[in-house]
Image 1 (cartoon, rainbow, N blue to C red):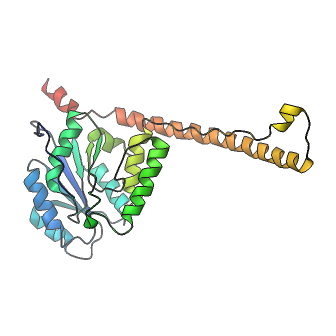
Image 2 (spheres, rainbow, N blue to C red; image 1 turned 30 degrees about the horizontal axis):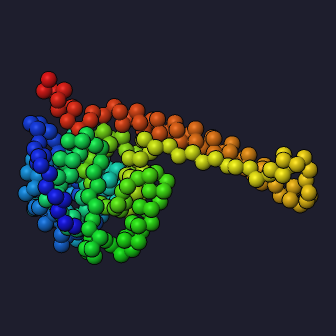
Image 3 (tube, rainbow, N blue to C red; image 1 turned 180 degrees about the horizontal axis):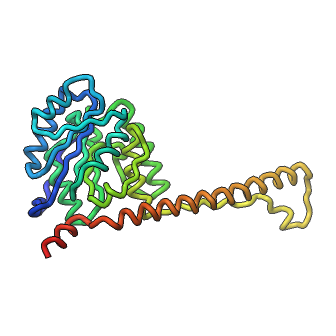
Length: 273
């Protein structure tokens, strides 16, 4: 991944502003030392947390020697690790990054600057498409399919849905209900960001129009089929309304939890003034 271009004003941490770098790991002994060292150099004010997800090698030892706080999550899967990290770690700004040294640590300050200056809740570090090492096998095709779906369903402009390099505000992290267990966590993060603001409604259009236009039914089998489809459509509408009500209730609960958290920098400003 290539560095993000430097911004006009580089991000500088405020006094007492807590920054956490979260690194989920599984058998990353060969790379985790470099990841921790790189982020310590770029973000010396941050606390680096490495969560070891049942590694069979020396991932935890290497990370601890490099200066990270090492914790364990015994439930296997990246989603389980992210759930534990978001619940355990208390900070105002969060950097989530994989432990395989795929991502450019120097881009973190530019990503944080974008988040704080524009008061965003999530900034995604998009991988460079020309770099073959930036994607695991099958990720490029999957990314294109997911990006196309998100553009169609949510009018979203994410170019790298599966990126493991993200910066979050506190209110995003503390309102995020982690449901996934594995690597689908990246998609779930994007859906959560969009679901708080975008609601999609589907309408079923009846096809039984001949009777209403002409007052007659020219073919009995067609009438039976149309009647069956109308009944099925009616049941689908009722089921859809029920599910939509449940979804809206859950969305409102997530939104309330989201709004209870301060915007990036707001908590610090309240403490100062």
